[in-house]
Image 1 (spheres, rainbow, N blue to C red):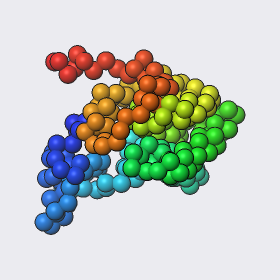
Image 2 (image 1 turned 90 degrees about the vertical axis):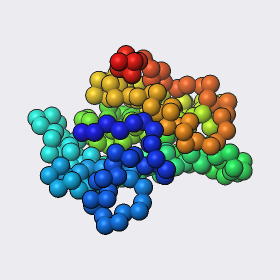
Image 3 (image 1 turned 90 degrees about the horizontal axis):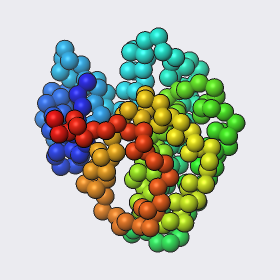
Length: 229
């Protein structure tokens, strides 16, 4: 596994370290060499660049004796959660904080975001995990979206909007509980998230930047020593 820099070093979000793979996989490839990539070491070519497929393949082939993240019969539900996170949380939160949108557009997007969070709140008030009593890939999808909502999108929402986002106690208690699990919290790279955000974001900072929902730093590893070393 190759760990890439938090901020791409080329135009269009490109990672220069991935360009040989793209060029070996497509004749005269002219696009950006972007992550993620699953490649075959033997051929030096790309197998997949689709994150959900990569996650599924890795979980099934290298999951070992651990409970499966993609239990048989739950694939459609997990895929639906992925779509919900992408469209109902990530996309709507981004639209709700757009500086070039008018008030009506931002209010509409915020309303969609809150409806999504409310539906998730209802589920997690009744059960420990999103799809029942065991952890699945759906929980990973949701947790990543919640981290992004609080560490990135919150910076472009007004304080009132962030308080409304935070007013889902079961949802954010679930986020904190997973963050306390080393399988989740140990992979929090808050500095990397911040650097990617500042490198690509052109929006204006809003009052919501001061209203943090989860103290993620309490669960993230201290990466200072590794960077200094």
